[in-house]
Length: 93
Image 1 (cartoon, rainbow, N blue to C red):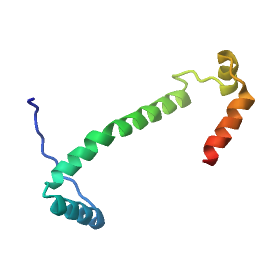
Image 2 (image 1 turned 120 degrees about the vertical axis):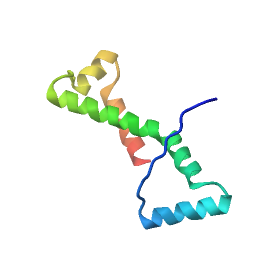
Image 3 (image 1 turned 180 degrees about the horizontal axis):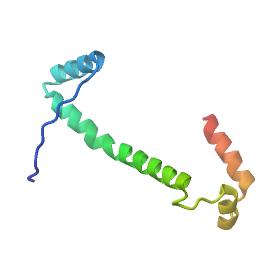
Image 4 (image 1 turned 45 degrees about the horizontal axis):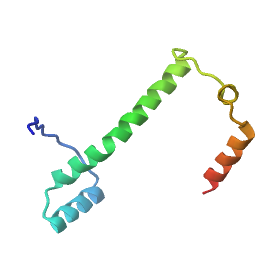
């Protein structure tokens, strides 16, 4: 597989840099391996959150219509009290 490679410079706090150095030395892998692995594994999470933030801002601007949760619960045929009880149990765990 062929892909383009780009170089990037970043500043890390001393503690984070030390941890990365120790890991790289202990495993005989380059630091870039771990940075690239972390990006590959977690970048999608940050993209998802950024998308949610954009949707929230669009709702606040009125560009996207928002509906009350109770209206959606009724429309979908759920029992609102049951959902609230399940949410309380999940939040307590």
